Amino acid sequence: MNNAVVIKGTTYGFSVYMDEQADFATITKEVAEKFKESAKFFGNAKMAISFSGKTLTDEQQRQLLDVIAENSQVHIVCVIDKNSEAEEEHRRSLEDHLNAMDSSNGQFYKGNLRSGQVLETETSIIILGDVNQGATITSKGNIIVLGALLGNVYAGAGGNENAFVMALDLDPVQIRIADTIARAPDKVGKMLWKREKEHTKEPKIAFRSGNNIFIEPVSRTVLNDIKL
Image (tube, rainbow, N blue to C red):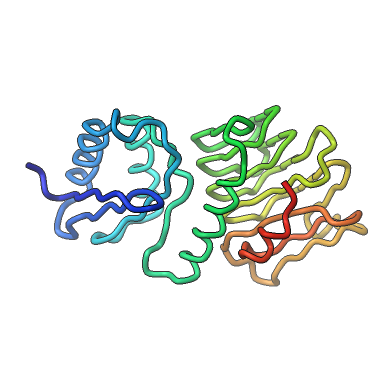
């Protein structure tokens, strides 16, 4: 039995423990084997995941998420930092919000969107990857990016003023919600665009209120005020 990786189910997803002495190639192989062996049991559930034991780079985490996707039908909706109370609060808020969405009205896209790529959907969508500058997402519903959102995004394309945009790193060139547009600070005009002097990576949500688009850090209070 391989012991470099131990996977345990939790109330919200998976906890993956990795032997800190094991090399990454061994960890990758065992993750692939164990998710493949349990694929039928896991089904196509939407889960959160946490990694512990061995410290991983962002790229290594992405590689493990790709391995899980290739060897099972599980949809990983977020990665949890078990050592961060703030991240735990974000996890709870995101979980509550996603649970409120009708799964029949949303879909997943796994992978990074490069410059020039355009993704259009009739439903709400969750992107498991980054949206780079020059890429565009258009959705008649909500848009959630579990990665960096640096390109153009258009939510509520069918006129839904209650649509929102959420990302783990929200720093787009342009956001449009229904008929309201907010651009980067040099073209802000009358739109309210909240941005720190020094950009910090933290989960944020953009939503429409009146004729303005507001960008706020993700919190339970903000999510509770969002209309679905």
